[in-house]
Amino acid sequence: MFISISTIGTAEHPATDLGFLLHKHPGKVQCFATSHGEAHVFYPEATDEVCTAALLLDIDPVALVRRGRGKGRGGSPDFALAQYVNDRPYAASSLLAVALRTVFRTAMKGVCELRPGLAEQARPLRISLPAVPANGPGHGGGTAMVARLFEPLGWQVEAAAIPLDEAFPEWGESRYVRVELTGTLRLADALQQLYVLLPVLDGAKHYWVAPDEVDKLLAAGEGWLAEHPEQVLIARRYLARRWALTRTAIQRLELARLAEADDREAEEIDNAVDDAEETEHVRTAAAPTEPTDPADPTDAAAPSRPLAEQRREAILDALREVGAARVADLGCGQGELIDALLKDARITEVLGVDVSSRALSVAARKLRLDRMSERQAARVSLVQGALTYTDARLKGFDAAVLSEVIEHLDLPRLPALEHAVLGAARPSAVVVTTPNVEYNVHWESLPAGHVRHADHRFEWDRAQFRAWAERAAATYGYTVEFRPVGPQDPEVGPPTQLALFRLATTSGTATAATPASTSSTMSATKPVTKPATTPEGGDTR
Image (cartoon, rainbow, N blue to C red; front, side):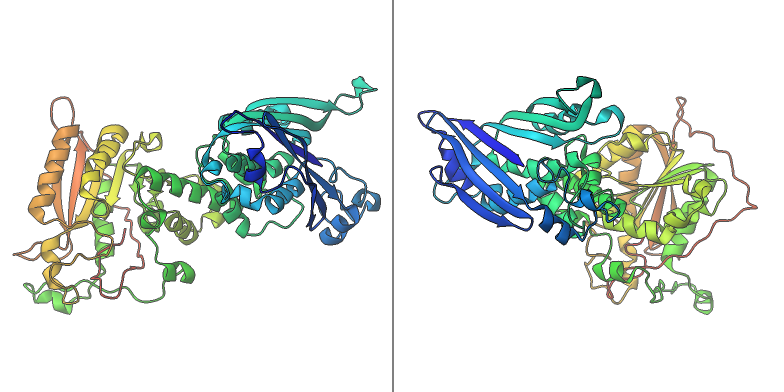
């Protein structure tokens, strides 16, 4: 198994700088032990003009069988000879990727203490791989797959299929490809890309793929994998087609992309689920209830209901009123509203969108998506996305819901959300709920001047919410009406305020709604998750 890395030099930057970058002296032949054989590093050519470093991996077939316990490619116990006679010692695979990481670990980190700044410089590189297994479905494998994986990264790819036997061309081509990659980039980036893409081309790994392989993939793919057009293919094949791990990797890649776009840390965005709750999976503590209305003594005798439940019913009433059949729950959190929507047969499609991959995972678990019937599962989709960016997936819905979402955005980001939802997605109706800060005086556990949830960037009074909603409606051609949610206080109003936007017609009136039959009801309960000092209803969706 062989790979060579070549570079050319100039008077200012001689080619032999490659030795400093790889931390391997050009004048020496070095040998390194690996778990399946020995790796030899040497320089066939080392001048100021051209320098080539080569890695020769000598695989021990016996060690490979013993460590693999006779399983995996070429190790089936049903074919004893295949355990020892196979392509593993010759074709570039995960064995070579692991050897690259073992031998050039410091180079892959982009560290060169002897020559500060050298590792950060892009330099012309040429990488040669004499035999690479390139497996893929149909015409997507072979040389085509090599191009699909490396060309988006800026490499010029020369790939030629190796015939099964040159003496018998009629036998056709083998699954092996001779590859030459040429490009100008940092050596560390080139090594990281090879570490990931060699096992992807092979489509197999010589070791068990554990959950920590997701971390290895994301670490090696930092800076390039999130934007690669074949990221799903790469994640699936690198993780040996383990779908749960692949799903986790894709969600984390999307979260990193969204965090970078917002110039924030991923942890700041993916905060919709408390770590304790994610571990528990299902919250067992009873949800706190909202305070009774002090102005109405009769309320004290009536059983109180969680504000989250009342909010959900108000949203469902609004959706019934506008006759919505296809609903997008934007900022769906853990899917409580989606659960309620799926209980109404008149709702034909529900899209749940959230920036938090952890929240989506909890939602999928609570909704039991993996146990749904095929017909029921076809009605619901959960996708990751940021609501401050236009998204073609949000178009075409009868209604969109922003339940306890806007207060989680920084005020300067609100215009972006308005454009993405009201301007670009443009559903026929939009339901928005948000806390009424005036009502906070009813909660003794909430200090004066504090918001209901640590992640709330603001909380509006009724006048502020009305002013924002009326301005947004006028800007994007909607009408808007306001409704209270929860017990009314004659002085400070309800705990939650709701705005129902309806797309206006050209004549300036609201689009006509078809009232839904009142013979069918929709109801659901949901656990409320918040800090112990947070009043009920502060951050459930």
